[in-house]
Image (cartoon, rainbow, N blue to C red):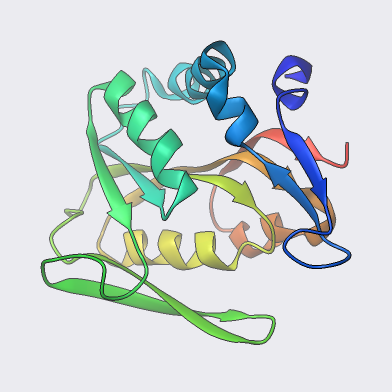
Length: 173
């Protein structure tokens, strides 16, 4: 995991002063590092009878689609409102200074399906929790909520205490 951690570029004061941004584009640019990150999720779930992989807009799409491909299952995108072309269901969730909403197609998940949820990073956990709840409300079973990066100091994992959570890289550890 240390080799993967070295592929993450840290950018201070982005997008605003005081924020340390963990840039995954450098990991994505390195073919072996990208393959290794995807491989971690694939190895964890190769024998877990996953029905589909859900990815959260936008960087979660990159990892979730690659994992779905390797597992030989479908990929389900979860997006901001107004981005999906068919009828959708939505979930609103709280942010530090307001609310946000995510959507997925109403027929994306069938009752009893085993769903792996993947995003690139967990900070406060609000978005991931909203998506996990949406999956559960559709009758899907959230097998795991997986992240490439977890920012431990923001305690986002606490938002997901009802679900199994896994992160490849944890910061600041």
